[in-house]
Image (cartoon, rainbow, N blue to C red; front, side, top):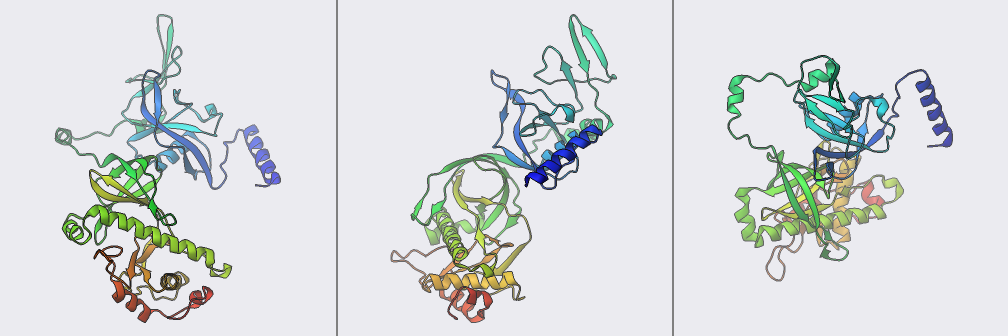
Length: 412
């Protein structure tokens, strides 16, 4: 931002304060937030940090307590049954109005269940927020020499804090076990380094993983996850379908071996995408990318973890080599040119297929190789390797386009 722009913003903010207006937020602003535990822990009686610092998108026009709380609840996926408490630090106290927040460089928040309790402020213990149940109005109660002030929330706060009535029949049913919708797991995650041809040192990650799958493929189911430590943001954890385990174990010796080969294959596809990005001329425009894929063990079961990509999923080329999108759009033609590129750059030994993803971010590739079996009779790459069949299918259907020419690829 230019100095002139900074100065204009400063003047506008100053004028707004003088006129008693609420501070406006610039488009695209983010809040730096540290999530804390719901209650204090340990001898120091501090709230514990949960995960790393997070950039929370703030799309509201004005900074109010309600808007800041809502932005944090939306980002961390907390529903109306939770209250967002904004604190001055890891020991508190809680902010009660926007004017108390002087340092916007870092906000501390915790999420507590809205159980209808009101906050009690004690002048002799201002560092902690206690709670009491009350039906009275705002007022003071003197007990000895200590003055206690009961703060009653406004109508909007009341509606979010007072629990909805629950039918007796449902309360009785809650006497049965209600399984959690998410499990917290600790994984040692590894990624494969193509340049060094080896596995890198594992990274410890704590994830919150949904119990129910949200998508399913030919061999694996996908589960939504959120990083709590080591990784941040929305992730995808993939596990094998029970009905495919025996078949994959027979073909690839073990699920562990096959999963590691899946990660290696993904790393190879990512390597080709990076090569093409470096070699493509400026007029080629945007090229494809792959996010990182990690191998891990969940209860002795081999799994993979990767970034969750928001958007509309499209499959351009199947693992059979069939070209599925033939609308002559730039992105579809680039998908064909990428497969063509991998075939040429590998010395016509392999081709990257199963090109699918969201926009220019691809995931779950397959590689078809001209040679299917290695010297030890093991299968190259993974279960989706249809070898010469897939390669020939693609070569028959593919017609070199302007992007193949920009990459200076020989016609096939």
